[in-house]
Length: 401
Image 1 (tube, rainbow, N blue to C red):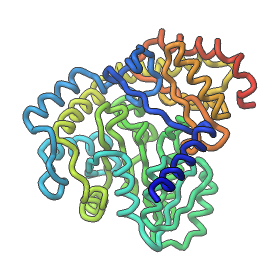
Image 2 (image 1 turned 180 degrees about the horizontal axis):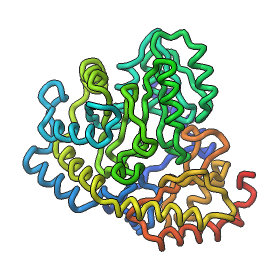
Image 3 (image 1 turned 60 degrees about the vertical axis):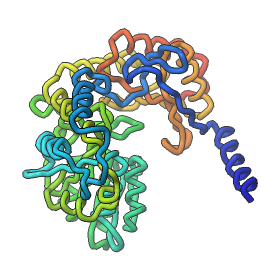
Image 4 (image 1 turned 90 degrees about the horizontal axis):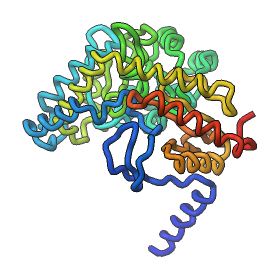
């Protein structure tokens, strides 16, 4: 019996590999950064979500060391048993004040964005309710919707009119709109002002997953506060989720919303109640990271300079970039095999750029997901653009038309 079960798994794995869908882990032998050592080689990495280069920032690392010395290595229990420490509480207060999704907002930290989104959707929707989700949402929003047992209604990407029609036709007792703020594989922004207006019109919640906008978007006094600040939005209907392992450079996630929403999550969200709390030293590291996010505008300025430079260098080239003003710059190749070959060719030239394939993206849209960070230099960006231009003739037949 066991051998038959194993044989079935092996057939499935072989089929994935034949379709160009096998994923391979790479093991780093250096800290996260623009240059990393992997498989014994130093590469320029355009793969990381460490958008502000904080994962190896000395102040953040020092805060983690000092936090571990004071608070120990582990939390020991869930937040509701005995695992909620003073650094957790302080971080939540600071995060709520930083993103300000509504007046008097509170925040709640989680060990990952996946857990946070499961908590939101399963606590705020259930049988008899309906969740309306952008078709390009991250997997954790989709999984949360399915676990909630609410009706799961998907609408075409960023199509406000289609969403409005679905909301108008719904007889659900409670409605919830769920969307990525910055779409992780395309880099474009959700039409949040229009979605917020629909939430008002149809008496719905608006769940905003700002995993890739928090710490990056926003300008002036709102710099780094995320996509809500970018659009100047605030509402008691908004339930905001931000991750802390991307631009913040550490780990975890948080939800910021009206106090009644946060208390509902504390009391009913299974992925919060039944999960051991993250180590308190990570909260200390995140508090240091948040100070940098708030005060060091030069990092964001450099990052957006690199984004503009890369897009300018690629203009008129063989591949059209997606319409993204964020650090995520996807280059759609099309076929899985060609995308893997292009990624391998870049690897051989000293660049680590991941090949993204279905089911992460729709079939036929396999791509290189190029991510820029504040740790990169202009020379890094120029070198990547030149390598892509040099390699392009060999991939002419796979380019989208």
